Amino acid sequence: MDYDRTEIARTYNQARNHGADFLELWMNTVAAHVDIHGVQRVLDLGCGTGRFSGGLARRLNANVIGADPSMKMLSEAYSHDGVFWVCGSAESIPLETSSVDLVFISMAFHHFNDPAGAARECRRVLREGGWLFLRTGVREKATVYPYVPYFPASRALIEQRLPSLEFQCGVFDAASFRILYSGEVAQEIAADYATYADKLALRADSVLVSIDDREFEAGIAAVRAEKRPGPIVEPIDVVVFRRF
Image (cartoon, rainbow, N blue to C red):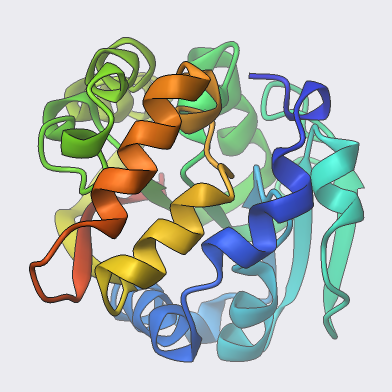
């Protein structure tokens, strides 16, 4: 999806701001699988508005280059010490060879036009022994992502757009990356269904913007009518690779 042809950027930060504990969860996850003392320069590839870029810079005490092909998304990025923004695609990363210690990819793999080319570019810009941290959605979990029951058309869209975990790992394996870790993180994205409905209503999601307006409004109403207690928790897959 070309984000510059949508209005997702306008509401993205508000919709995807899940609080300090959420960011701490993900920074702890990165630190658990990467030697943070060996990281001085990070590429946040497909950074969007840079919602993880500042956290990476602070937690790793590193310089972070946030790269994204969407100027609209980058225009909504907050300023952070040690973070620099560049416009560029995963298939043609505007960085020198062996110039970063860590590539961080969050929910962007399914937007790559040429996944194999993107993996080769990641290998090129990573130094020997560098890490690649993949935070990603996968086709296999289409039925368990929390908004799917409320938007019936979303399941088919997710199954169509999200590659399987096996495929994603295979792409990096073919580029000579080695898997160090593969697992799942359960992240809290809203304390209750009323808050969740408010976030979803901002429609800052590439699947939700593709759903018919009538179904979207019906889904939002269904979420608002939900009587179950929160929090709303979403499973996200994590794979950590190393370049050898």
